[in-house]
Amino acid sequence: MLFLKTFTIHSVYLFYLKQFLHLTVQIRSNMNFLAHIYLSGEDEKLMVGNFIGDYVKGKNYENYPSPIREGIILHRQVDSFTDSHPNFRNAKKLLVEEFGLYSGIVIDLFYDYFLAKNWNNYSDTTLKSFSRRTHAVLLSNFFYLPKRVQGFLPFLIKNRRLESYATISGIYKSLDTMSRYTSFPDKAEIAKRILVKNLHILEENFIAFFPEIIGFVEKNYNVEIKKPDSTTTEPGSGFQNIILRQ
Image (cartoon, rainbow, N blue to C red; front, side):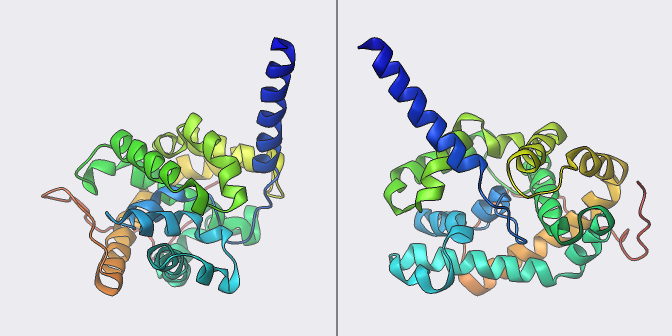
């Protein structure tokens, strides 16, 4: 009986692991969770909608309660703002030769790295506390999550994915996982090398970009983001004449 119970638990674990690992990577990243959750502010339902935005297609957002529906729409607007921003487009130039249409996915993750790395500049709480609150909110709204999200959420929590973005090794692990189990190119080491060699210029790029998207969501969606009393986000200008160093 104990063997059967253990076998059943193991089988369920493998089922959800397979469901998570075989997600098909789209041209638009669905891995940059940290920035999307942060840009949701204090509204928990908005946070849920923003988190699941990549997994709700077309008009299916209309099937959700109003606050979650607004979060899904916010997610799409954040993606649109980011994709069209000159800083994001310039950053992609560092990766397009190696990653082509997947360049945006890598920059999304790089941006999450710089957000996590400089977290105290953007939030009045610790990244650990923010991550724990996020986990609690998602679990309390578990039945609103699409099946695919329900499948990978336990692994996101177990592996402390949001906190892992604060290290280059955490970003590398995310990219390596995608390359091993999805259609994402098997070039995690190359992405890591580009990040390390262009760390300063990429960080300047992010620091110049991020206050603008914060302002965008606060002004247009009445999002309340609790920031520290003083935020050191001096914009850099290093991307006016970008040089690819690989």
